[in-house]
Image 1 (cartoon, rainbow, N blue to C red):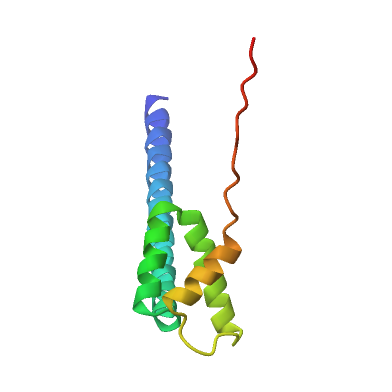
Image 2: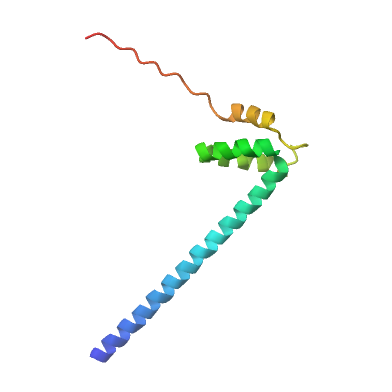
Length: 114
């Protein structure tokens, strides 16, 4: 009885270890795919943007990553569809940003006397 129980435990332990190894490999593979995608994206942006525009986009990415991600994806989409003829310079990027990023609303608080 004890031998059977021990064999079942060893078998289960071995299965769990194999499962953990396969999930670890999947995570590593996912990380490698993500890294490769990011490298392709950087290469595409290098072809689309001038140096100054890339620097501005980098600063935006540091402050608002989700906005920068959206802009990067749109720029790549424009380039793939053939809508971009020349590299986008800093001025053009600022114009694009002003259209894509909503204006901040002024919030005024009025106090009422009690």
